[in-house]
Image (cartoon, rainbow over all chains, first blue to last red):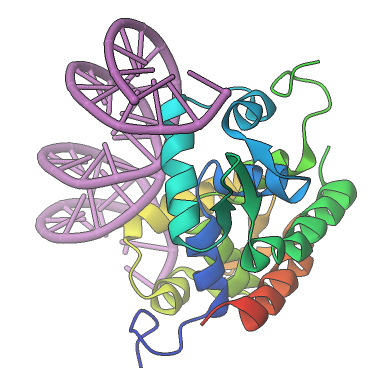
Length: 99
Length: 99
DNA sequence: CAGGATCCCGCGGGATACTG
DNA sequence: CAGTATCCCGCGGGATCCTG
C-alpha cells in the first residue's frame, strides 16, 4: 500500500498540493476578503509579476477555486471560499506562535 | 504602507512562507502524529529523496518547528505542534470540498 | 541506519516589452 | 486596464554514490 498511489491519499497531501506554492494562499486570502480585479490584486500582493499573477489566476481557475466574472472581477468559488477555515487557522497560529 | 516591508506583514504571508513548499506540511503532519526517525519519515513520505529530506529537516529545525532528539527521533517543538490547528482545518476542508 | 557530497534538471517565477 | 509573449535565471528537488 503505497502512499503515492491514486487511491485514498493523505488528505493533507491533497490540500498541500493545492496550496503549496508561493502565491496561492495569498491570492486566495486577498479574494476571500472581497472580489478584486487584476490590477487590484497586483497592488494588494505588492511584488508579484504580471506573468506570475496571470498564471496563478489560470491555475486557480482550473482548480475550481476562483472564477472570473464578466466585469473582470475575480471571485472565489464555494471551493475557494471554503479555504477560509484554513486561513483562520493560519491567523490563529500566527497569532500564537509567530513574531 | 507597503505590504512587503519589514513591519507588520500579513500573517497569512508569514505562515505561507513557513509552509509553502512541497514537503513541509507533509513532514510536520507525519511528526505531529508521533516522533519518527529519518528512515521512518522516508517510508512514511513514500517518494522523497534523502537529500531533500535532509534539507527539509535542517530548515525545519532552523525555523524552530522540530527538534532532533539524541536517539535520532525527530519531534515537533511547541511551535511545530501548534500547526495541528492548521492541519485540522485542512482535514476539514479536504473532507468538505475535495475528492 | 543517518545522512553528506555531487551532479543535474525542470519549472516557478521575475523583468520587460508589447497588444486589444 | 488586462493581460500575452519572450527571455532568462535560481533553486527546489530527484538520483546516485559514498561515509561514519
